[in-house]
Amino acid sequence: MNVLEKILEEMKKIKDGNRKEKLYGKYPPQNKRQETLNAYSQGYEDGTDNFYNAIIPIIRSHINGVPDMDNGWIPVSEKLPEEKGWYQCTCSDKEIWNDDIVIDLYYYPEIKEFVDNIRYETNGLKNIEKYFWTKYVTAWCPLPEPYKEV
Image 1 (cartoon, one colour):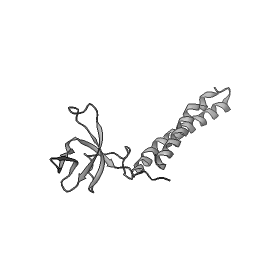
Image 2 (cartoon, one colour):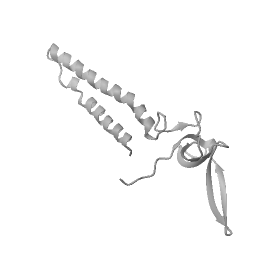
Image 3 (cartoon, rainbow, N blue to C red):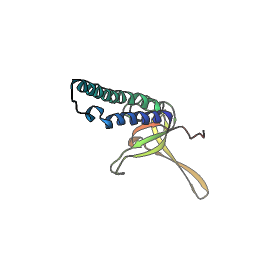
Image 4 (cartoon, rainbow, N blue to C red):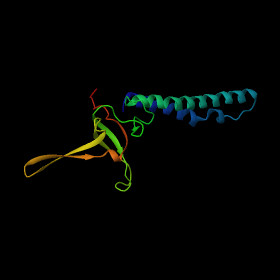
């Protein structure tokens, strides 16, 4: 989990803690002053929720270094990668799989294809077959950074 994900997690704990406490409803107002304090408390909880909901997309857009509001996934209908390389892809075909699957595929921008290179050996000869997955890919995102020991 990267630093931004940890920040989101901590912010959610604060938001949920404020909402869970329901400070404004804990003490039914006995007088005008308590009624005013309850209104302030309700405003504080609502403000915390609103701020959290507004900041989530901004932080998530930086998690993978991709300006996207859905955990870094970019629908192929919006954009294809600009550089060749390995990408994590969500693939969908209800006739083949019951649910969507996530696999790593290599993207070639010059031919606009997501490809899986299968290596196999027959009769001592090494062969590579390319399987084209582009028609199944619904969204993609960059691969996460490799683990680095701290």
